Length: 293
Ligand SMILES: [Zn+2]
Ligand SMILES: [Zn+2]
Image 1 (cartoon, rainbow, N blue to C red):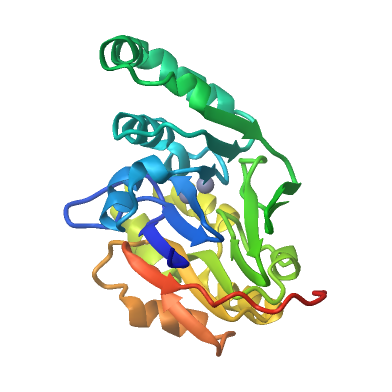
Image 2 (image 1 turned 90 degrees about the horizontal axis):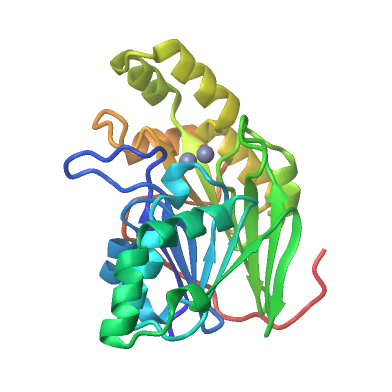
């Protein structure tokens, strides 16, 4: 199996617009696992377009319970199930994830029970295993380790950056966060850092377009990271490759990849990619095992 990162949904926030990008979701194929990170609207379609057979789904990580990260969790699992899922799926999410799942299966009880009786499918409620996590190690299994770091995303308290490592390769997802210097330590030496980003001119244009401008701007500034500060985190962490993701705004024609790069380049000179739906990055091959700092 190829080892790759695919950005399935690259925009921040729950809105979708004609021809525009989807809310947050990513696929990481590594060490024989297919890991979905966040389940914004469009995740099932994105996985299919990326060439992944949905019944192969086996691990899902939810960084926090804002809807642009979790809205399609239930529908993804249900769609995988109707596509033939027969094997267990592990879901790691913050406190409240179980309630999201239980509410979904309750709302679809008629359909689920019908398909079990009528089509002979296994009970999806027994295939899906929810584990609610806090900060620290989530998983250490066959050389795959997953760790979580609580980040700064007020008013959400249960929001976690995720670090996934396998055979000397490491990738870190920032989740949604204000500029958070401890993230540089968490991501130190990572091959890839996928970090959320805001563009200052884009935020001003976004605020000017909306009716609730002052409240929106205050929320964005308190809870998210300007692209220049993302460059600062990548530089302090010494990562191999920075991917800007969860773009705010993601669908302003006046804010192009060059504008994003110019901001991130204020503090970052290394490899840089501006996220977009369908962006695929090959993962570096396994490295000889060594002691890491
Ligand atoms: Zn978000
Ligand atoms: Zn959020």
